[in-house]
Amino acid sequence: MQDLFDLSGKVAIVTGSTKGIGRSIAEQMAFHGAKVVVSSRKEDAVQTVASEINQAVGEGRGSAVPIACHIGYKEQLQNLVDETNRQLGKIDILVCNAAVNPYYGSMSEIPDSAFEKILDSNVKSNHWLCQMVLPQMIEQKDGVILIVSSVGGLHGSAVLGTYAISKAADMQLARNIAAEYGPHNIRSNAIAPGLIRTDFAKALWENPETLKVTTANASLRRIGEPEEIGGVAVFLASAAGSFMTGQTVVIDGGR
Ligand code: NAP
Image (cartoon, rainbow, N blue to C red; front, side, top):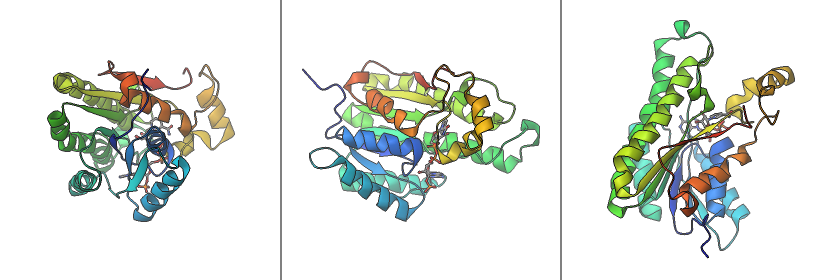
């Protein structure tokens, strides 16, 4: 019998993986045998988190290497890919996780600069990174792309409208890649978390009253923890998910 969740020997990049959801994905992929690139804007943070993951995962499993990258800059994305190839070899798994949201409020008042920043970081940067990595996946006739979207992309929003547009586009990006590159044995799926206790979503959970309102409609009646996302990424990236592509997996406690 095969361990369906084994990622031994696989090389994975996870953007924005020093904290929160990205860190959970990087940790779990390394724990399941992958050689994972830990990445974020901050050089010191990527060094620290990569060595913490190596210590936690221990001998005989996967490992982590640090490569800093601000997803807003095309040349830094290219460097992330080139450095990964130089240090670890060809990329098997790409997780586009880092995203931004500099604006909360009405769509009619959002400055052009914020609108552009959200779409550039959350959609165009993911598209660029996929463009950079896909040729080597095609060559290997094997590859997995995961885009971290959000349940925000599944319904309208009065206050996070542009962010929601970007997250809906991320689901479509995953579907497009699945459709175009499926014949090359490349799978692509989106993960859509609900409210997760990370710094990114602090405004929605820090105040106990706000948290109560936000989680009132969730079957589980609680916020999610970052550690509850990593397992699904392992499933989607491994043999366990080998017939699954073009989908969006919602993980939101039943909201
Ligand atoms: P988080 O805990 O704040 O972590 C964000 C990570 O991304 C950090 O490692 C951060 O490190 C890095 N980062 C931020 N801006 C970056 C940039 N421009 N370039 C490269 N790295 C960058 O956030 P999170 O909640 O885990 O969010 C991760 C993903 O989950 C995002 O796509 C978000 O939209 C999605 N999501 C979150 C929730 C939620 O409730 N938390 C719900 C649905 C979807 P540095 O600051 O060092 O760069």
